[in-house]
Length: 336
Image (cartoon, rainbow, N blue to C red):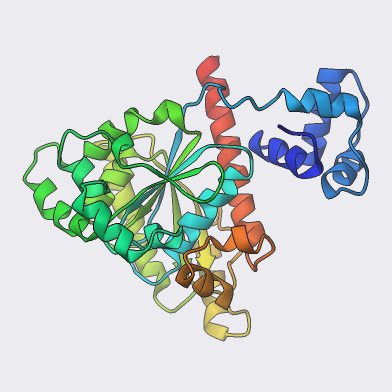
């Protein structure tokens, strides 16, 4: 339960507030006059949190609090853009606020599954036992039947295997094939705060399922030539899905990835992204090209879990903060 600086920061981020807003909330609750500077010193560990405040904070995040998950898809039909690294590290960043997060691997390549520590031999065994996403989409089995805990607190996984490659063709023969995942997700909505779906690098029916179920889409875009063509195609797809089956779907932001500030092409693409989309959706600070992401993936580890200060970590945390703020606003509107 919250009592230290890290726990205070996580609670503040879960509420979607900056330090000034958080101080105002504490003052309202306790009749105190805490300042942003005080919050900063407590979060950094430079000053000990008063016992009265620690006792109050300890009661703010009970594990049995009501949940209503926000569904988030990470999508780009182009491969090699850092999509899985974005999905996995964003899911982890969301847990830092004390949330329960489900990561769903919607890609038959199983990159997200491997990234969180499930080895290839284990994936083969999961497939043999019908415990991957394909079997949920193609049977009456509930999503909960395939969910696994990861090694990170608050983060669970719905794994994928090669069998998922068959789902696009098989779902096309089903008149409601584009909505199966949405139905399956209803069962786990009250078990998680956030569900992050790592989509395949295509616009097939499994990806369409994820977009039909999602409320928010995050679009990772490598800062390379012709990157905007892929973004436009995805935006067109999202527009069609919004019009036909999911009117509440919206793009939560674009994350430029694999950015090298020394390269003219990367700088030009980043500028073009901002000029083309910044007035419509957030374009977040770029994730630099860094070997730590590839090394972590190869080791079956989440980059931010092993290196909280990895290049680009603050971008993931800012995206997580905005998603928490969206969820808090949605919940407030629902209660009202």
